[in-house]
Amino acid sequence: MRAVIPVAGWGTRFLPATKAMPKEMLPIVDKPVIQYIVEELIEAGIFDIVFITGRHKRAIEDHFDINPDLEQHLENAGKKELLDVVRKISHLINPIFIRQKEQKGLGHAVLTAKPALSNNEPFIVSLGDILIKGTNTVKKMLSIHQKFGKSVIALFEVPKKEVSKYGIAKVKRVDDEVFLIEDIVEKPSPKEAPSNFAVVGRYLFTPSILEELENTKPGKGGEIQLTDAIRSLLQKEAIYAFKVDSAAVFDTGNKLDYLKTVITFALEREDLKEPLLKFLKELVLLKDKKEKENS
Ligand code: G1P
Image (cartoon, rainbow, N blue to C red):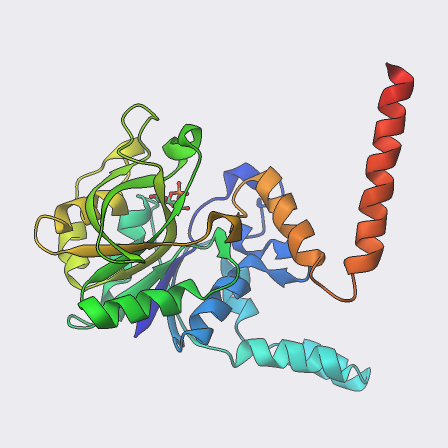
């Protein structure tokens, strides 16, 4: 099975950091966000990965390629561990890069992958912003797909006031963990939202989604929305869903959540845990003290 990762977006929320660097290369401690997304796919046995990329995203191609100069330098310097880390990345996957010449929305990005996808095999779409810790979400989608043979979408519960940031699904329970999607809307207002079950950015699609995408007109924001294509696919095929634990979801696409992600991941690292926690505690004490002095 193949996977598609759309990575053509501008990353305007992180300017100026993303002026010359893809937002997907922002580091979570010392690993770029995109590598976490790729590792989740690898763990689920998926190695053929189609990146929908753009002119300003070359660093992603370089990240998954070999770097002979750097490898030589690390070898000469006797930095064996770093050499292994660097070499491993270039042998992780079989990357396929397709340029999305114009950015016409997520649906359009997925459709751009069509030449690299098979007509009769399902495929995964993983969005580059959201990291999900714990149980592997892609593996979970694969196992639900094996059981029901249809598309599967991962959802997570969000506070009602945040529904307008996501695709929101109306669902019906099938069993302890599986739901059927009854309806789906892209970024509704809290008033319009059919629930608070949001699309988390991991999808498994039957190839029929491509046909729907071909017929999808621009929707919210004038863009070709993947959610709209899912909505029309619902008229023809059942689409299943399951919930991931909201506490395991890390949205690196906005500044505050990005910082929370970096700190959470760093606090799990043996080499950083203690000194970072000590620093954070001291920082909080100092801030409290200053606030008291000023009040
Ligand atoms: C996209 C999708 C949305 C989904 C979200 C998850 O929106 O259009 O349905 O809920 O990703 O992150 P974006 O975040 O690209 O605006």
